[in-house]
Image (tube, rainbow, N blue to C red):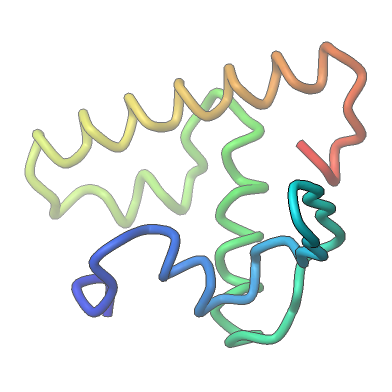
Length: 100
């Protein structure tokens, strides 16, 4: 399904996880997410994002990762670290965890 979208922006538009925009001339105002896309996909995406709060693999992800190749595990773990530290930085600045 991911190959269906040439750019990440289009995938996010399909999920409905993009902000509303009220623009006029030079003024751009953005609001809450649109929620007009695929609700199931959006829920899965949000749950996956919440799992990156932790800097450790879950037991379930370790069990599912066993049959994968080592290179896939390394890429996954690298993404886990990067997204966890981004979460920690934004939370450290005082952002509400739902926005982070």
